[in-house]
Image 1 (spheres, one colour):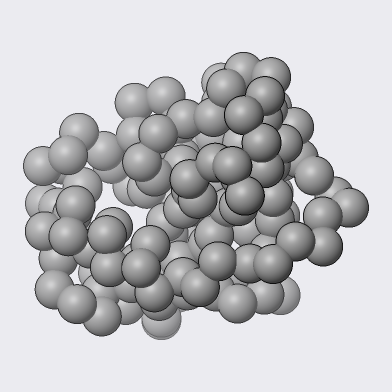
Image 2 (spheres, rainbow, N blue to C red; image 1 turned 45 degrees about the vertical axis):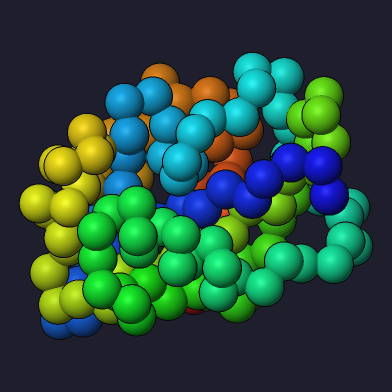
Length: 136
């Protein structure tokens, strides 16, 4: 795979099922947007990267303790870019409440999917798939 994996990070309240995604200035992909020409690859049968290293790197970047993120195994998508295929992983925060301070420290915030307007089309598609997996 030519491109570094991206993560969609979310928090889902255990009692209310309220779901919010970690949103950066212009993307919901941690930790960097994809090229404008990126497209969802619906036919990929590629080998998936193990999420452990990506989750650990995200926890470190967010200054969170180990185990703060948990991968969602049912979400397996790839995006085609001019530089190659980029795997996109979905991971949820394990805390009772979203880590608002950690998000703010890196210039991000938690937002519901209804605030996704304005994101690139490929990210809207990725969010739609993620939301479908999360709501079952």
